Length: 178
Image 1 (cartoon, rainbow, N blue to C red):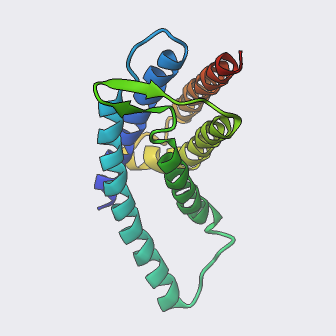
Image 2 (image 1 turned 30 degrees about the vertical axis):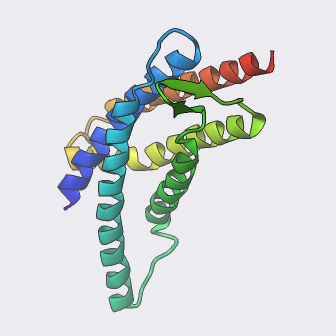
């Protein structure tokens, strides 16, 4: 089950980074598509990953109950991973349909307010935190841990992409204000 979770996690990472890149280019007026179909595939994978993680978390909690030792301080990263995932789910829910809606054959944009900007910034921040705390275990599961420089390179690439997403959203917001 853990291997399946890693495969789903890698697929989600790739899908949502592509969606983020395409969406950012759309917000900047460079592209006409944000990869909506790809995002819905990713949403389906989120359901699969949420179910997998729920089963694995319940197993962990049961083993903690059985031993009577929780080691909360030592397991802080475990709980950070779970909490950041739940926060990401909630914010992603608000992300869907944030920019507009389909009306007939056309897509109607809705005003991009400061609240919507805050939701987008929170989404990007939650995504960064969730990826940051989960990259190491993902690389361990993939057998890449011994290459520490790859982990650092991955952090750098992800940081640049998430910064790009943030800048694109802010430029889009400024465009709505002008």
